[in-house]
Image (tube, rainbow, N blue to C red; front, side, top):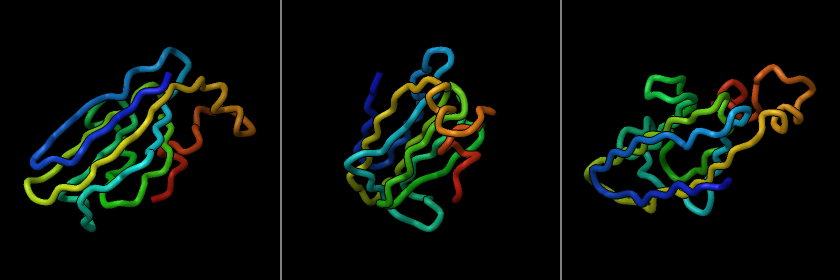
Length: 128
């Protein structure tokens, strides 16, 4: 299953959501495509996309993204990814487009020599 997440930066916008929950035994892979252009700032205080590994706004933070550098492909550690997009009331940019799909955990674990629920490209494997 492939699903598309898209947003165009509009002034003073605040959107929260969960990537759909995959079937049991699957994780979520999130891949940014074609455009990622939000207002840039050193601490992402104006326009930003926050991604968390879990179902809640207090789940472990993967990273807060802004600017025009594409985020890497992300794979959830479990069955949930929590996303929040926020923009201030000043400059507008193109926004972003991302595709998410469900991947069987066995296929993800196949890429490493053993399966200890550490998923490649997950927050535990990412460097910031």
